[in-house]
Length: 78
Image (cartoon, rainbow, N blue to C red; front, side):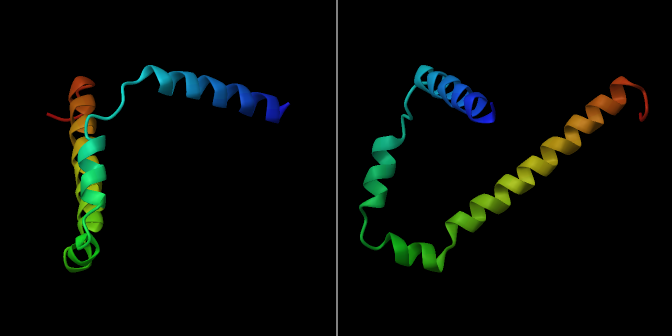
């Protein structure tokens, strides 16, 4: 039964993904991936780590403001 539900969920998610448009940045990303020196630049400047840290920071700030708005709505804080 679990396999049946998993298969049904996968088919539904595939259908949803087919409705979404393709990325407009696909060509740019493919061109950047073809650069021979990109690995050296990523070794000197860890862009991936910067993006992860930035995403974590943005998520934390977003949660803070969401909780702040909710607490103001229920008049728990001023």
